[in-house]
Amino acid sequence: MSGSSITGWGSALPEKVVTNADFESRLDTSDSWIVERTGIRERRFGGTTSGLAVDAGAAAIERAGLEPSAIDLLVLSTTTPDMTVPATSSTVHAQLGCSGAAFDLNAACAGYVYAVVAADAMLSAGIGFTKALVIGSDTLSAITDMEDRGTAVLFADGAGAVVLEHREEASPLVLASDLGLDGSLLSILYAEHGGYMKMEGREVFRRAVRACVDSAFKVLRQAGLTVEEIALFVPHQANLRIVEAVAQRLSIPPERWAIVLDTTGNTSSASIPLALIDAVEHDRLSSGDIVLLSGFGAGMTWGSALVRWGA
Ligand code: ACO
Image (tube, rainbow, N blue to C red):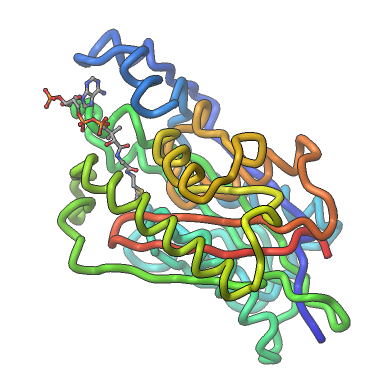
């Protein structure tokens, strides 16, 4: 049996901290509303998608003890590319000095789950890839209307990355996955070219909870595992109330959730790796632990993956 494992990780956040009080002073909102309805206390704004991706990617490669040229597959999950053409992964590939292939992947806030599953499958396919850098990087502040209190307080910027190394005689990284979408729901969350994010928040909330719960049960069934066997639940960091609603329906207690949204806001593709890395850096994972990655986003997309940590 062959498989891949996560051997390095790194995150990057812009320096500028924007607190709820900063919004209070210029929008009809309050710290208490934002905390109560979302769980977000502060977030970071700034940087570019490629710049944050390079910082997170470089840290992950260094943590894995590799030279950048050893990376032969770069997958960049992003909803906010630097340019329309070429893909932002081209810039990141050049700046890091990676080898082999690189591509962007856009599945909105479920994108990082899609990216991990795609990279793991490409490593296992026997088509020549051995080491993948999987980055989630987004600069949502650039496509958010800062005068719209319904979205301005939610979205933010950041990047997170992991290195996957393929090995013969290793157990698989992704034990089960479920990637899907309902493209007929485009109108509840979208941004046109050059425009800002438009969102029907309540509808996204409702759909997200249902999609994440159904998808999580599906991967558990596929893997023949129970909820009790999930050591860490790493949800997309959009809103603490969505996380609570999903976790409650799955019966996962709070001590097994990875949460960073209170200090990061919703960083789209970066949110799952940022939460995962925070848990790793707080020694919350041991070799062999089962982790549930769970994302949803514009599209509407969803993705769940059960991964085995460090096996
Ligand atoms: N401050 C104060 N009041 C506000 C704010 C704010 N920042 N934003 C909205 N309100 C008001 C609304 O205008 C509304 O007022 P009204 O009753 O007079 O019309 C009231 O608060 C309640 O609004 P709701 O939308 O019902 O509030 P809700 O409890 O649903 O919370 C929220 C809104 C936070 C947007 C929630 O619905 C949510 O998180 N939805 C999911 C969003 C999400 O996850 N999006 C990302 C998807 S991932 C991706 O692809 C990027």
